[in-house]
Length: 259
Ligand code: URA
Image (cartoon, rainbow, N blue to C red; front, side, top):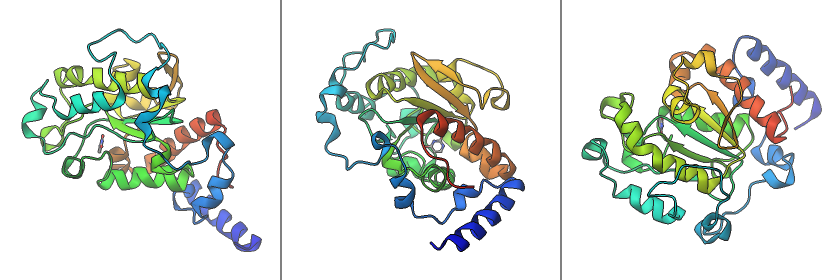
């Protein structure tokens, strides 16, 4: 893109930013251009059949309490989740939404709340309306691809009417989440919304009080932030969400989009 147009566009986007719109989500720069500026280790790679990785079979000891899932490989864990009947959510599900993305040492694992209708239909996390916004933030904002990160939820089956998972449902499902994190060993976990913040950080406070500050989960850095569905209802809060993502980008050495 010619420099003059790039500067005009940047200035325009910055104005949007001032009005509370994280301009980077609407940036027109090609993602390949952004990708080229990523540090070597963060550049997208073509994913081979990932479960063959020896790394995955022998995770570091992150001090997770042992559970019946502790010895399971990623594929075995997924298999177990697909047939899970540990709580009532299995009765209404169409598909188990286990997780999606890079399973060999992803830079980031995003943890949402639970599948919605579209996710339940397709078996993939964040593919509905909130997912569209979320995917835009990853690709246009952070300059990554969905397949460069890993995305999952606190509960793997859709709660009826998209209600918040009940404490016993979350408790039944978190062993899957914890084993996923133990196997994946991401550099950073980003929790999206209150149930994920509670499951990972153990903090039962309003998300607006907790977001934007670093926490830790078994030696992995955690950034709690807002849920994309909340951003659909409160677009002004995108600014806070974007600010949290930028803190993560800084931590990971990902280049910020030009201002
Ligand atoms: N909301 C979530 O928390 N997770 C999804 O996968 C979709 C919507």
